[in-house]
Image 1 (cartoon, helix red, strand yellow):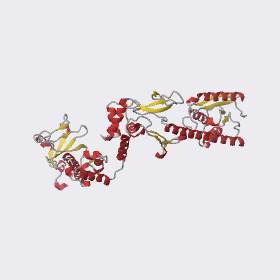
Image 2 (image 1 turned 45 degrees about the vertical axis):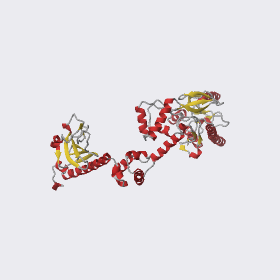
Image 3 (image 1 turned 135 degrees about the vertical axis):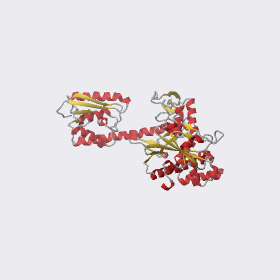
Image 4 (image 1 turned 90 degrees about the vertical axis):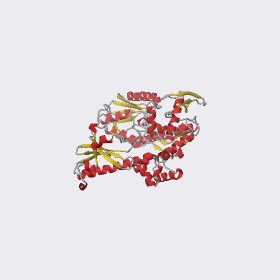
Length: 503
């Protein structure tokens, strides 16, 4: 029998699932009877409906109870709990004891009303309570093992185990006799406990879009981000009625279910532990469990493509790839590089400061490159030389220089941007495209004009941006170059007022 000097008590009840609401009602009724029999007045009731007892996470009722006790605003001296398992099925029995000790340290007793022992601190009560806690934890472990075994058997029978269907697929209820029933909507559950759930094909337009995603990835070699951007630009929504993200695209391109394969036990998170991946040998896989959205061959190609894109290529491997292309085709072009499934043109440009530089390091003859690629490489080299020369001249002139971006400098409080342009023949005569910056903070544009062969710089100009307020582009040609002579300078040193002896 509970021995206490006070008649104020609180009730704590817990049920594991939402379908056990009656269980909390039963607990409350039994605890009220216990309180009446022991002349206790119930002042508070704390409830955790549909909450697992494995951890404290999400158990707002128990958290509120412990908070009230530790804050000194409990207003009661006894906590009535139906049994040890309702207090919790903590896998570490010391955790359960710790929360009870926190109550006892604040002068509040925890009474397990349906247990055959009184929680009076006696040796017998301590031993029985420890045994009950261990039994409560073991019950959860055994139940978890039984549920896992049942899930594996159902998967092997071709039924899915929870989760959303995904874009292009739908969940469908299957009766105990194997008959297909109704298609389940988002968040909708099967009507009968004996029913199972499998996949079925979604609307035709979703299946078409799934195949388009594979084509964009395999044949256009678009990234997950680029595919998501294109789908969003076309106003196509994902299965949640929202915009596509790279993660959703990746799921479509990598999940076995799109090839009709059911997979279970890819990761483990049993008994509220942290999620961890399982080895493929422990996966439960069922081929051809339902109709496929794409062929197995296409899914395997997408996976191989992803592994290849994620491969960490060394510099030597990338250069060897260029040499292999040259040996096989007798030339190297951007289209050939991208069609091989190896490093892309952008990867070469990023790693070696341009595809032309990579070609030179690989020892591949320049004629295999287009004239435009070679010219662009020369312009980058010339731009780099001009920036170096600008910094050297500024140092010789004792001018304060601050680099704002790779091609923009602040020289004595004046913002200057460097622009190197190649010669074009787009208007039947040589011309140069000068892009005027739209940044109002730029004061001058140092324009380096290449000669008609695009092999060297023929003339330098210092263009005041303010004198061209209505222009986005300038197209000087051999017919109009004389109009820009007023801005011409023989060299960068002359712009700084330096002579050759000053450098």
